[in-house]
Length: 113
Length: 116
Image (cartoon, rainbow over all chains, first blue to last red; front, side, top):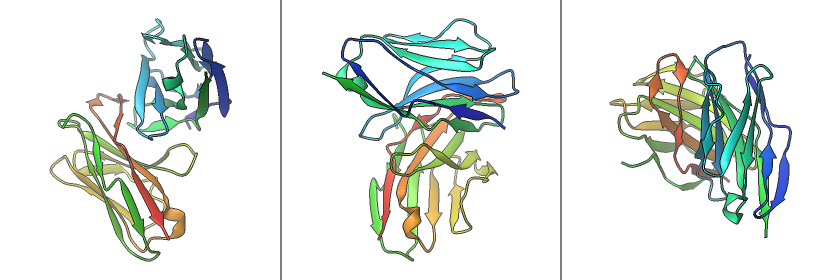
C-alpha cells in the first residue's frame, strides 16, 4: 500500500529565512505525481508545486522548490525568503495510477515576523 | 466557473437530521473527489467519481453516507441521520484525468458541518 509520511507536525521560520519541509513516501509504482498543497487558515487548499516522477529535474515555482529523490522516495519542499503569507498547513500528496491521492498528515508552518 | 465551488459554506444541523452538501467542479474536469477533514487533521478520502460513476467508494465511513454525480458535473454528498462524529470540513476537488495517473486536484473552499 502507498503511504505518505510527514514527520514534522509543526515548524517555524523567521521571515526572509529559508525552511525545508520533509516528506517521504512508499510505493512500488514507477509513474506517479507528487504534490505539495498549502492550506491557509481560510481552509482553501492551494497547489504549491507538482513533480512528475519520470522527470529528474526538480520542480521550482518562484520561491518554492522541491528536492525529489526518487530512489530514496523523498520529496521535500524548500521555501526561500519566507513571508508571513506562507503561514499555513502544508500537505504532501502522492497521485497514482488508481486515480487516488494519498495525503500526508501535514506540517503546520508558522512564519515569524 | 473559474474554480471549484461548494455550498453551503457552513451547515449546522441537529443530530439525526439528513444533510446534503453540493460541489460544482471546474468545467471540463472528469474526475471529482470528496474528502473529510476533521479539526487540525489531514484529509480522509471518501469517494471518487469518473464522469457519473464512482469506481472507488472505499472511503465512505458508513452506509449513512452516499454521493451522486449528474451530467458529469455537479455532485451531492448526502449524510443521513447525522451523528456528532460527522462534524468536520468536507472538501471537494476536481481534476482532469490523465491516462493512468492522478493529475493535479483543484479544491473547493469546503463545507464546515457541525452536528449538535
